[in-house]
Length: 397
Ligand code: SF4
Image (cartoon, rainbow, N blue to C red):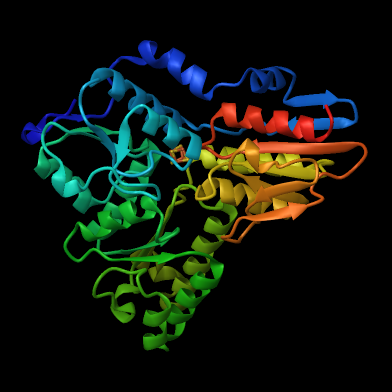
């Protein structure tokens, strides 16, 4: 526990893992998934071959966050407990926490308490994505007991962005400006006097930044195109002279690398290779769990796979990117829970690169079939197991 300034902040759990293990196992584990894993991630039933990606589901950061939340309930059975926002982007996990009486200050569902109403009696759990500097300061000022479940890989990105700000570099963050993690990350830049940031979503936006770096033309259009995605008072003529690249931990890693390279080339063109180090910094901040899951789906779909099912929250960044990868190879369906598999004909899913959830027909081809299954870093095995059971049933097994 960190007790600086008299605030109780717990960052290492409460040593109650043994006491919550059974609940965690009951809520999130799957016997079927363990069996398939033990058989080399492969299940053959009749004319159906089911492949399970070598890396899928809960990552180390999510496991830790979920564990902390359960331990917190155990440690403070009588206290009001709230999450800053969804603990992770998975509906089952967030519903389980609600059923345990853990409320939400923010997030897509109903909000149970307002931050201004918190008292020192309240316990607040900070989600795995972390929280903005301003919100952290408010929570400290309220004197609540804080349980910090921010993932260590997210904190590494913050350190990088803070370093950029201290050295006078503008942080260019490849990420989603509305995602909690990116909002928390960019707040680290502006926590320093003169700290600046700009968020780019994809290569198209990155190309606009590169164009501006090379030509310094179209200032008004540039500011309009990136409205809400830069720090207050951002001046592209001044703030694109020295830039440092970072990324949301769960982005498509190949795209992050390309964006880093594009920006490097633009800065080289503008300032020459000999002065590049004065103007440009770049660190790949994709987390290893995201990278492992992306590598595993590439590996799985390179073989003979007819259909891929990707399981995870529709607002889960890393799950969306798994679907993007799979859809480059074959038919890919991103579902958030087993009930999305309506029957052998219809499936409710979110297509790659789109925001709406739709129902498609004819998702399950007739005859011998290989189906690949993977899941995002916030998806419990229990949800994966339920989805596999639905697939088997849809195929008549
Ligand atoms: S996806 Fe990566 S950064 Fe996010 S919680 Fe998991 S390990 Fe941490």
